[in-house]
Each structure stands twice: as structure tokens, then as C-alpha cells.
Image 1 (cartoon, rainbow, N blue to C red):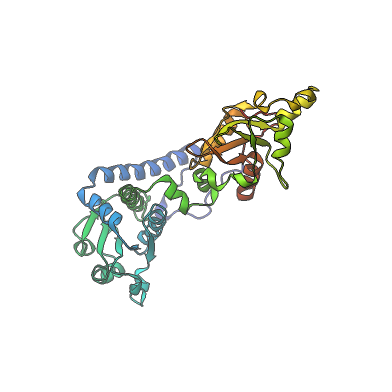
Image 2 (image 1 turned 60 degrees about the vertical axis):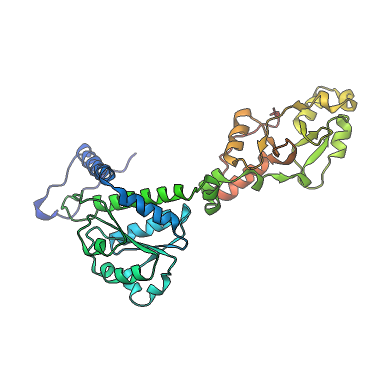
Length: 361
């Protein structure tokens, strides 16, 4: 049973009446979110060439992007530091109050500065603006308009427009901070594109968690060829199984190669089990190429793990050979490894369950 909605205990200021019904409260909540969205849309339409220049300067920066701001703008700046750093632009935050007590020394000539202030008149930021500009490669400001001390001090001034806060009292920074965040993200994204930042680059900065799993290359997870079971495709099943034996934790399949060393087929433990269950022991001395899976599904070296997992799930297979551009095997993805990897990173596995009888095909 859902918990009852608690009524506010304290009286509201200015004799305001709290919305009493769930529907009215939901209407107001949706209205606040819509107003922030509308402010972002309006800001997007008003952006000019200076925002593009800001992205170009950011992409060209050889040092770090130093972001500064105070109050809510400072909190927005700290989030933008994270956005920049994860998309190819090394960045760190500089608190303006700490800057005047020695932290200005963290700004180098090769660095670029982003200064964020809705009014452009925040005393702490305006005070250090000349120092930041003189000791960096450039100063970009993000403010409501161009007519303020901070914007005037900048090499590039980005105006985001003046927006009515969605706060019922019109006081708490809400729409303005949402716009700051969106515009900053937009500049960072364009800079990332100008740097030709790829998904593989992104993966290098996100090795853990869901993003890391999605963007990891198969080469980093596969079992290398040295510990895989490999045999020639022109030998008998018995000979292949003996020749490909491995000590330790073995894979559930033997990769079979032709005379040129290219992958010709796959023979799994499930294939062997089916022969034994059917009492067909007599075929163990026949050529394995009559029983192997021809042209099995493969993952190309350098491809993403998420695509390989999707293929294994769709085909309901437990082993997936990894091949190079010439079609020669270089490793193998084994479902048991992927399950272990997933569990170690996020708890119980979310990978599809593979039955022992599932055949690689």
C-alpha cells in the first residue's frame, strides 16, 4: 500500500495556500518542468555566433579548461567540468574565493577559462576576471546578456538571455541555471565534435559502470588465443578434442582453422554431448569438418562488447570467436567470463541465460 502524502506542517509565507489535491500538485510540478524546458528552448533560439566561437576556442585549447563561478552558477560550473573532462577537454573547477588566496596559480598560459554568472556582476568572479584573462589563453563568459562587467572583460561573451525563474516566489535560481547548464553542455558537445572525439575515446574515460561495459572493445574482455582451444579443421573429432585440450578453466568450444590459419568452423562441448547422448561414438573418428558449425558468428577485433553481447543474445550462443580483419581467430568470448564480468561490476548478471544445449551458429 502506498504511503499517504503528508501535508506540510508549517504555514506557508504570504498566506499562500498549498495545493491540496494530488492532481493539482502534479499539474504544478509539470508546469515548473515545462517552464524550464521553455526557457532552454528560448535560449537555444537566441544563441549567436559567439557560442560557436566559444566551442572553437575550447576545442583548440592545448591546456585545461578552467571553469569558475560562485553560488548556483558555481555548482553548474562544477557539473560542466565533468562534462568537459569526459568528452575530450581536460577541465577543473576554480573557486573564485580561493583564487584570490593563491589558487590563481593553477591557471596557466595554455589554459582557457570559462566564467559563469547569470548577472555578470558577481563580485568574486568580476574581481578575478582581469587576472584570469591575463594569465590564460582566453576568457569565455556565460552570462544573461553582454551588458555587464564580466562580459565586457571577456574575449568571448556568450549571452543566454534573461529568464523568469520558475520558483513560485521568483527568487530561487531555476530556469536560469537550467539554461546555463544546457548552453554549457551544448558548447562542450560542439567542442567535442570539433576535436573528433569518438565513442572509443569516451570509453577510455569511462572504464567502469554501464557506460564502460557498453563501450568496451571485445579485445579487452576476450580470452586470448594462447588460452583458447584451437585445432585444424581436417582432423578427426577425437584428435581435435585431444590436441586442443587446455589445463585450467577451458572454453566451451574449439575453434577450427584451415590451412591458412583462418577460422573455418566451431565445435562446442554441446556438440560433443549431443553425439554421446545419441550413442554416436563411432563418429568420433570421422573428420570434424562434417560436424562443426561452418561460418560461425564472429566479432571483429576492435568492435564493441555491447554489440557482441547483443549478437550472442539474439543467436542464443555461449561462445563467440573474435577474428582479425583477415578472418584469423585471435581470441574467444565465453559467456561464463561475461557473466563474471557483469556480476563483479554491478551485482547479479543481466546477461541472457544460455542453456548447456545452446549451439553456436
